[in-house]
Every structure is written in C-alpha cells, then in structure tokens.
Image (cartoon, rainbow, N blue to C red; front, side, top):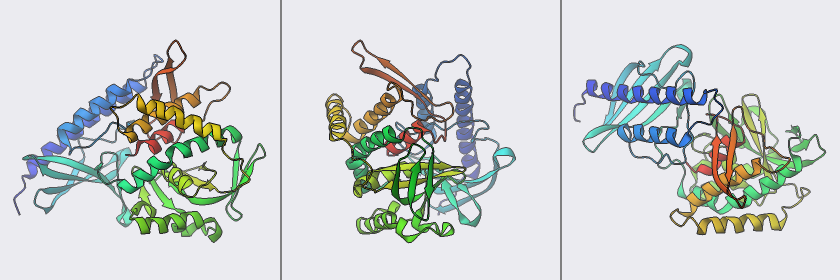
Length: 379
C-alpha cells in the first residue's frame, strides 16, 4: 500500500473547510439582509459549485438545496483525531468539533487525476449510526429504477396533491393510529395507511413496518409492507432498508411514488414536534381527482417539455413542477403553508404567463418549498 502524506491530506481538507465556511458566512449575510430583497440563489449555487469542483469528486449540484446557517457547519479548526487508509487511493479523515456544533465527522477522500479529492462527509454518532450530509457522493443515492418510478408517477401525484390541498386547505388535522383515521377540522376524514416518519433530529426516514416502538396496528402497515416486497422484487433498496438519510429519499419522494404505484387518492404529511408522519390516503370516499385537472397538468407539461428540448425529461419535469408550485402560491385567495422565511417571487409577461420564478428556501426547512424542492429534485 502506497504511503500517504498526512500533512498534504490535512492541508487539503482545511483549505476546503476554509472556503466552505467563507461561502456559508457570505450566504448567511445575504439571507439576513434587511433591505427586503431576495438573495441571489443562482449566484450562491454557482459559488458552491466552484468550491466543490476545486476540492471534490464530480457531482451535479444543479438541483441540490442550499444548506447554510449560523453557526456554520464548516469549521477549518476541526480537530483531526486520525487519518486512516482503507486502501490504495482512499483516505478517511476523522475529525472532532467542540462547542455549539459539537460533532464527529469522517471525510472520505479519493485520489483521482493525480490529486486527492473529497468524496463525502459523514456524521458519526453513537451506536454506529452514520449519516451522510449534502456533500456526500451524488452517485447511487437513488437507483435508476426508483427515479424511473418517480418520473412515471410525479405528475399524477402532484395533481392529486393539488386536489387534496383544495379540499382541506389549512384545516387542522388529527390522526388516530389505532383506527388509521385522518380527520380535519373542516369535516373531512379518510382512512389511511402509515408509510413512515421523518426525524428532524437525525435527518432520517423510518419505514412504518420498522417502527416497533410505536406498536402500530398491522392493518395500517399494508402499503409500506407491499412497497418493501416490491423493492425486494425489483432491487430497490430504499423500499427495503429500515431507515434512510433524508438526503437520499424523504417522505414526500416516497409518498409520491407510493401514491402512483398503489393508485392511492393522495398522501398527507402530518407534522409534529421533531418530525412528521406520512400517510397514504387509500379511502375511496375521498372525491376522485377531476379528470380535467390531470389532463390540464399533463398538457401544460407537454407544452413545457417541447419548448425545453435541451433538457432531458427528468430535468424538464423537475423545473416544471417547481414552477407549478410557484403558481399555486399565487392563486387568488389561497396561500400554501410556507416555512419560516420561505417565499416565492414570480414575474409575469404581458400575457400574464410566468416568465421567471425566484424561490426562498430556508435550509433544512420542512415548509412547502423545502419539501417540494426535496421531492422533485431527484438528488
């Protein structure tokens, strides 16, 4: 095994952390500007892409959410606990950070093009729990089979969610885990299947069939168990593994696919302190999606796709649904529930068609925009 120059490894890592902290602090300052204007998110993403290109293995950040805040998640003064070499051309750097952002991390570095590059950062917890953050490798996060399922069902699921949102609006909700009944303060109520839960503390997805601590009734787990069997039969590990980091798949992404595969009437995200439950509405008493709503959405997408010939279908679908989310936000008399500091600014041409969309997405937000960007990005 070839000898590794540990001084070179440390120097490269600290250079990367220094640039990332400077990027974080600049973005945070722009988002805190009290002038009232929106930050230039394209410029922020471009600056991030330049840093990643200099220091990391190749990855596509075109649809990645921007993560920054105070205090910064990047610290050039992280203490290095050790440098391991699991094989030729691969190095793991274990770091420790004290203070408010106390954490342990493993930076994985690969030697490519005659130089070392950072391939991923992983947070290390007790009980051997390892969670990748957004700078983790982009490849193989989601299988091609899973992405194809999303592409197949995203439009129909999105239309169902528009329809459901029109029925329940901002009504408060309750869910009885024993009966599987989801009820709203405006009188609606439907039987549901429990798909799983998101944890904001650990940034993970947990399938309902793996949630033994909650003692969920077996009859509410049928949909999740069906998806597990589907995953086993089609080689989709995301349907089989008990828990997954949210940067790979989150509840909205899973529910979007599940809604299509199981021909459900829609899905509902029930937020609670520390996370959210994802419920698949299979109750046939929920009024069906008006055919014209789905046909209109498909028609608009086909027109959009034909005018964006330079993009592949998945890219076109991602951008189209982004603009549809923005359009929903500006419908007369209705405002979808944004998270803190989230918002949409839309420009229209003389014919009142959308000409530009700018979205503010709070890092780590679980508001509408953060969730829409998560489940449509496919990253």
